[in-house]
Length: 178
Image (cartoon, rainbow, N blue to C red; front, top):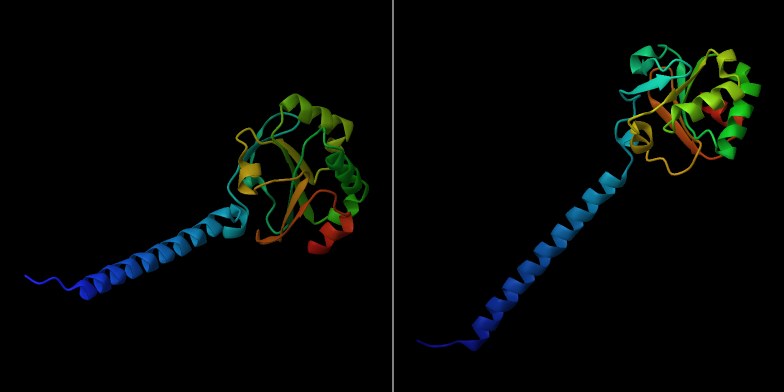
């Protein structure tokens, strides 16, 4: 039995090289998987999702099936106590004529009492193209990966995603996407 030192070192180096390359490939694959999972769901599935929320003032269920066909849809995720949300609501209701072929669904995850207070304060019953609803399952903030309020998501007449906005947005900017 002879021991060849150089061939043993070569074999060890070859194995180290293979293991290093394997680790590099695995790291690369896992980092790409993380990038995909970091992408919000609404960008991976760019159509109006299935949902159930509960409308003001009577808490009746409202789903995707209740949306008007052949009308653009704007989802606004808001908080009744958010100053930016209040300002956005005032601008939209002031310019409601610009949304005549649009349905607006304002969604909050906060308690019913807070939502209904906002509903009454801004006289939302006077705006039939606006539905205000409560998301009891916290679906919308997760689906849209909401980071700021208000968060606005615009869909065209065919239910295809067009554009998202965060924070204060001029009404004309939203209307331009419709």
